[in-house]
Image (cartoon, rainbow, N blue to C red; front, side, top):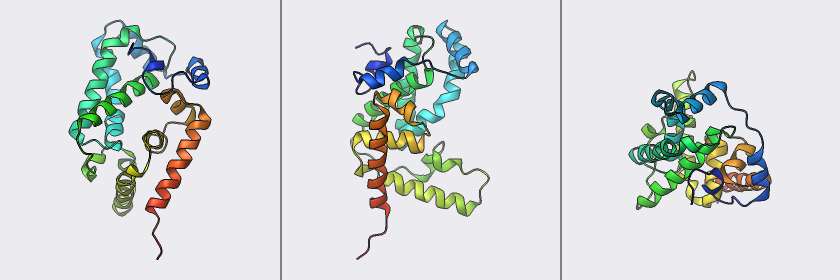
Amino acid sequence: MDATKPEVLVGSAANPGAAAEAAEAVVEAPEVTALVIRAKGGDAEAFAGLMHLYERRIIALGLQMGLRREDALDACQDAFVKVFRYIGRFETGRSFFKWLYRIAIHAVYDQLRQVRSARTVSLEELDGSQAAQAEGSSIHARLESMQMARRVRESLDCLSRRERIVFILRDLQGLDTGQIGVVLGLSQITVRRHCMSARQKLRHRLSPRRS
């Protein structure tokens, strides 16, 4: 298996709809493209710049998937080690962000397999996640937001593996349906279906039960 090819990194790469989406032209921020080109040429400073741009989001992804902070850091490091190893073969014109996310998702799953039992993420470990984005709001509102985020994360075990990663990428990481489809190798219809199913299950889990 060639780990440098995004199509084989995650899930249903043979999906014709996903393949068509992946083949579309990608628009990426010019500064990111410039860093990728320099990193492909062996520029260590440019690679460090890419890490600075994305490492917090990769760590947050690990935390949201149920890793402890130290395990999320390990997963992030493993992801960037693989990126460093293969970036020279990364195809210019594709989205670096989506390629990185596919590698990161695999790194997180690999780390989860090494952890015997998933532990509840502490409030301190939510740094970089959606709950930590309440800058400027009142302390009371921030606390409520963090408590709700914690309840949501504690309820993710009711979701299937695919529902969980779709929910996290869509509702916690902020990717749109098209991006998720390309990252996971799924059609947008399938992504929406998993997202709706995940939200319904979470609403049922989090809603107060009436006797």
